Amino acid sequence: MPSRRFKPSPPDFGPERSDPKCKEFEANNLRHPKNFPAYKHCAPYRAYSKNEEDQPSHHWCYLGEIMVDESSPFCVVLGVKDKDGEYVRVAFYFDDNNSFDYKSVKIGSTIAVMYAEKHNFLDGSYGLRLEHPKFVKIFPCKLETLLRINDDIESETPVDCSQKCKACGKEEHPDEISLLRCSRCLGASYCGKECQMDAWNAGHKRECKVFIAVNDLKRSRDWRSYNIYAEPLEWVAFGQREKSLKARDERLTDPYRVNPEWKDAEPAVSAELQGSFTVTSGELIWGQLASVLEGLVNPAHDQPTPA
View 1 (tube, rainbow, N blue to C red):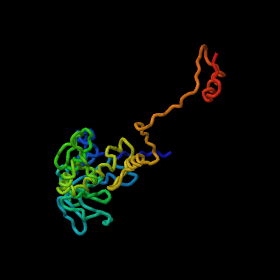
View 2: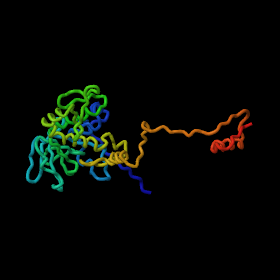
View 3: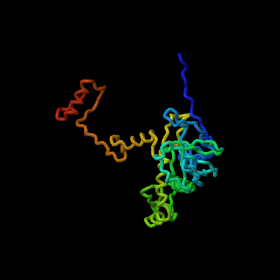
């Protein structure tokens, strides 16, 4: 009988989850050092094959600002700086060049690479070799701006945190001022139309789409999941949503699913019973009990008086 072969656990990398910096930020926070790592904490090259049989240990995304464009007619090559200030080389090796918008690649923008792996090039340099366009996205802003937008979104999340107008800085107060959110990105709050217009002209017009894209990235997958101790994960590209989260959303929006609104429910009205009886001694025997029940159902009948 052939021996049973067990599939090894996917390799882990980056800082430990018990690291204080990992505990400082939520799992979907762009400042989380393990889920949004600098180059030194990315996976080793070819650690994963990105197929259905090989799941990642966890979801991670490299972020780096494009500083230099060294592209040639044969290959797009960039010089990128990550959150730790380290410069690395990023080279595009896409089989289908029509599947990626190269016009979005500009100096001063931020490149995001899902499931980034470290690579040593033949000329002695090191960086990222990009082979899957669906795992690459360009944010039209500097890395510093991207992290600030992340912080703005995070500041809107805690219910016990006072919200501030993004234009004038006024804090929300239930008795004095109630802030309104931008209807497009839901990530910027304002105390009125005037402040909203001022912020729009001052820069939110350019950043609104970035707010939406950052929100999509943060909510597209369960960043807390960990393959070594939990269910196998799946490769989730930009513009996609993890199946488990998608199934959960479908359950919540199922029109055939009855949600009990107990707070608004009308109290049940009990029907008044007809007739009465008293027990003078002993217990009712079955025949007497049947007569009593018949009298309750048909009150027009004469009511029996138990002995």
